[in-house]
Amino acid sequence: MKNYLTSLTFGLTLLFISGCGHTPVRSVFPASLPPHTAETAAASARAEKFRSITAKLPLRGVALYPAAFAGSFTDKEVLDAVSRLGFNRIYCCLTSEQEFDERLTAFLTEAASRNIPVELVLSQQDFYRQYRANRLIRGLFIQYPDLCEAVQRSIEYNAELPENIRFSGWTIILTPHLFNGNNTERTRGHIYRWDEKRYGIGEDNDMLMRESLEYATKIAALPGLGKLTIAVPDYFHEAAVSGQLSCGKITDFTAIADKVAVINSANLPSKLPGMIAGELAEAGEKGKILAVVPIAGHISETEGKLRRRNWDDFQRSMDNLIRKSAAYDSFGGVIVSPLAVVEYLRQEK
Image (cartoon, rainbow, N blue to C red):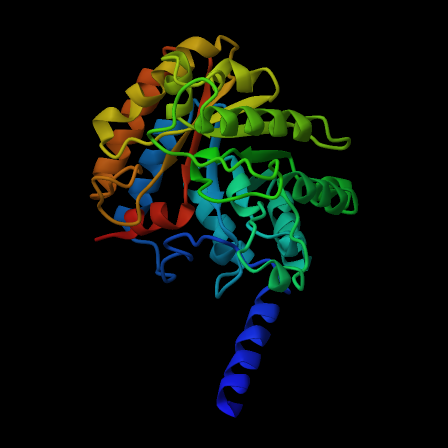
C-alpha cells in the first residue's frame, strides 16, 4: 500500500508540474540549422541562383521556429542565412505564450538592424483546450490561453517594444482539420471531430470550419493588431467549392485578412502549382495570395510536404511554382518552411 501511495503521489505531482507551463503540442523537424560550415563555392552559387529565381517576388518569406535560433546559433548566424538566400521577411512561428520573452526581443532587435521585417505566427493547433476524463485533476491545472488570448498577449508584448523593432504583422494558422477531441469552447454535449466521413453542410467538419472562420473574424477585430495574414491548407477551398463545406472558400478568408497564405500540400514538385491554382484564380485582388511551401525533413510520399531530393530538384520546383503562379495577379509571393531544411539542402555535397 505504501508503494502504491508513493507511486500515486509521484504520478499526480508529475501531472501537476506538466500543467504549470504551456508545453508546445508539436515539434518541428529539424529543429535547428545544420552545423556551421565554411562557405563553399558550390553552396554560394546555389544561394545566388535561388536569389535570382525569387528576385522579382515582392514577398520572399521564410519560416523560423524558436529552436532554430535559441540553441547554439547566434542571431547573426541565423540572419546571415536568411540574407544569403535573399529572403526579405521572416515568419517567426511560436508555440507558447511563454516565448514572448527577452530572447525574442533580442532577435527582433538584430533583425531590425538589418531591415528584415519579422512577422509573428501563431497556430490554432497550439492554443486550444481539451476536456480530460478526470475533471478533478484537470481543475488543478492553470488554464492555457486560447488562440485569441495568445494573440492579445502578443499585442501587449509588441506594444511594449521600441517602435522600430515591433512585429511587422501577424499570421494565424487555422487548423480545424487537426481537431480530434473535445473542446471547452464548444457547447457541452456537442463533440465535433474532423473526419473524412463527416463532410457535408451541417456536419461536424462544416461546424468546425464555420467556428474557425468566426474565430478568425474575432481575432481580426482585436484592437492594436497590425497587418493580418490567415494561413490555411490548400484543400479547404476545394472542399467548399465542391459543396462539402458551407464556407472555407479563399474569398471567405480574403474578406477578413490583408493576405491569405495557402499551405501547399503537394509532395511532388510537378504538383506544386496546381494545388493552389484554384485559390489564385478565385482571389482576384492583386498580390493577395501567398504560397507556402513546407519542405519535408525527409523523403515522403504521403506527408503533404514537398519531398526533398537535392538542391537542384528543390530549385527547379520553386522556379516552376513561381513562373506558373505569376500568371495570376493575386499571386503575391512565397513563404518557404523551414529555413533549417533549406540550409541542409543548400549545404549538401
